[in-house]
Image (cartoon, rainbow, N blue to C red; front, top):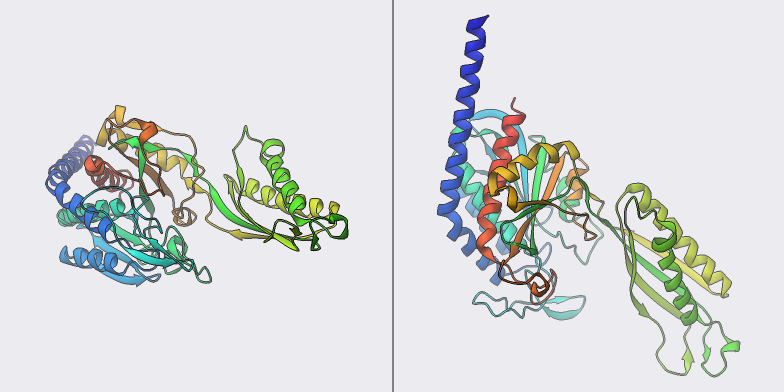
Length: 433
């Protein structure tokens, strides 16, 4: 019995020493590769591509993975790339995800690698820019792939590197795209993924800091289209028509009561925003119809269903009260980004171990949306944020995501590389086979 116990202790000690050696290699290799990660990011920034058009980006990624001896799958869900690295030791299958697409935004930041790319979007010419930091996500994951491939024989389990297109969406939504498309293409199978991790750069957070939240982390997003139909008439004789403009105005106000009076805000916030109203062409004509479009953000499935029903009820009842007709169309978007609570609890020590306790923070929910949620519907997942603000820059001067002035401090990228690597190693240690 004593002999068996001694053998078990020796085996455990040997495993811990091997794990410690791998983590030391991660630190050393991430120092070496930092400049390469930054150069990759700058190259992608200078050559941005919109959703499902990431041909150049995908080729660079695929060529890099192949050069590391990683098995590569291309053209997954249009332009996606998947790399499969089989470690030399038994262990779980861990997936890491980066999104590759840019946005129809014209860059104003004066940097040597500024984007001057143009494209046609919604029938208008526009600049194209990595205004949400996906260029950094790709570069970081390429660095992770290089480090982990370099320790392949000592690596426990299998790592899937998922380089995903179209997180920001596409104009043609008739077929699955983005994470939904990748899941339906089978990226979580063959081999079956046990867990998935994803990160997103965050411009207001100090560079290199890790932020996270257990449970609901980012909102579900849906679009709404409302058409109010009245009866056109001369603006001087409103009694001869039915005014859809006045009705639409009442609907906008009515929709605000969903959040202020119907949603239990003590449980979870919600947002209902009308972003545009189109109707009429002349100052003295009451138009026949008015169209409104907007966004809906919710944080639970039950809340999502409830808010949709309230929108339909308010719109149709106000329209009927004003002798108008109304059509409501709700276009489903991404589900809630839901961090697996037990997984999050187990992996937070990895954040602290990697960047230090003072550089890790738990944050409130974010009402923005992320299609990483599609992966989390299938397997346990953890989505976290990596800071990208120069600490010398006041937070109020940090340009928001999706704006022409979006800017990243690149000094924190190394923490992203190290965190991904350590999540793989620590998860394998906790869930070895």
